[in-house]
Image (cartoon, rainbow, N blue to C red; front, side, top):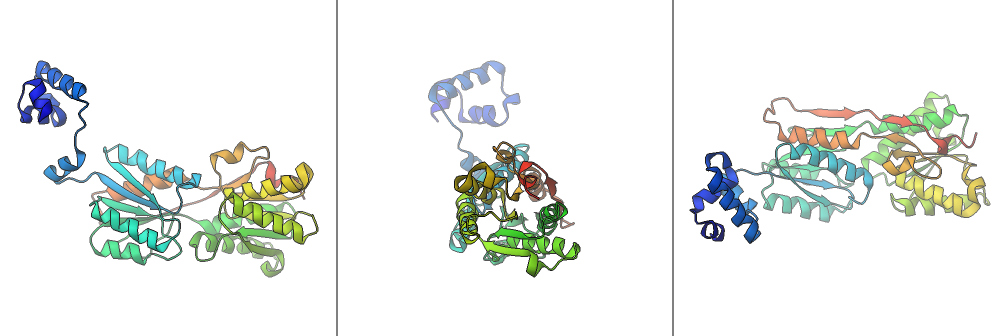
Length: 331
């Protein structure tokens, strides 16, 4: 080994400096460290794992890492893994079943310690197959009824009810729901929550709620949907809007401002979902349903790393409504 030759020591001494520095004399350790710096040497973690038969890499598959919500989830995962000097291998499925299967297979081929997976619209079959082959799996942002697979999720039905209930309490009796496809569980649960709130108010959801499926669960999807709504209403904005997430809500706000300036923007009450960091910094701060993204990622990683698996954990976080200007203009 070049480092051993440069420092004038044995390969075993270099290994001790890297893995058990306390057993090496200070003078020898300093000489080896100088050689490492001079040669810009980086230890081969894969080889070390093979030698020690220990695995320190965890795979995480989310729907779309471009969404800041999933970025926060990933940071929570990373924070927990770092406590044990583990590393994160992160990928996005883009809600594409083939892409999802490909990344799950790659994680397996890399021999990861386990996987944290946000399932897409295709369901959990691919995850179940991975679990059946012996890889530890935790479902993330998705409740589990699969024996042997723990989960961490948020009560999205309660979150939808919080959003709609807030608008109903402000006197709105007509709601638009800008939602994603019903192939995605979160979209279904949030829609059910909206209808729950309307029913609790003694109203008929079929009369009160108009659901519009966005072209994408991002700002462009929200912008396009709001432009169509305003065109259908001869230039008027809808009275009150619940959005499937904050990105859609931000796009809807952008469309309203572009079509009619501040006056049109303030003619509608609007609620998002996720409470992204940027949501409080907008020119029109966004009312939103907060999900504890960091805590979810952290807890999922903690469950994955637990040695005692005799009790299967299914954690459900409760959402919280954060009221800001965007829902208080109209009504």
